[in-house]
Amino acid sequence: MPEEVLFESEHDMSGAEIAAYLRTVADKLDGGESITLTAGSESVTLTPPERPIFEVKAERETVASGPDELSVEFELEWDEGVEGEAGGADGTLEIE
Image (cartoon, rainbow, N blue to C red; front, side):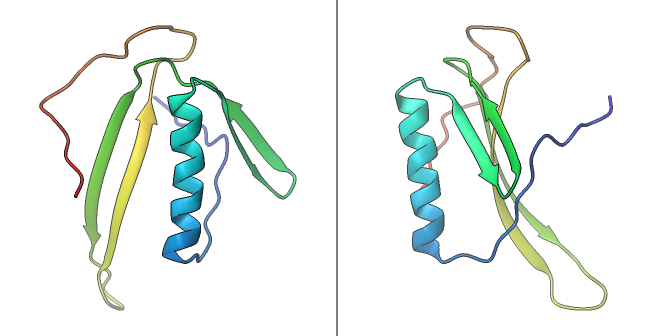
């Protein structure tokens, strides 16, 4: 299935700046509110369901022309137009 990118932004930020963005997302999720992403003239508003799927992924990308790149990704996922539970849990997630 093809993927359509609705919004994308990539910036060099401090840990404190990133934490502030994540706190805003956490507050919106906690309050059951929509999340609006804006950068320049681009903007998208999404309304996650009460129980979206939460995916956490840590990756190492090996690059032949330089040092490996490490990343951690946090993703919320749900079916468009479907309310309620998204389902699927393999165990309890812990982040320390």
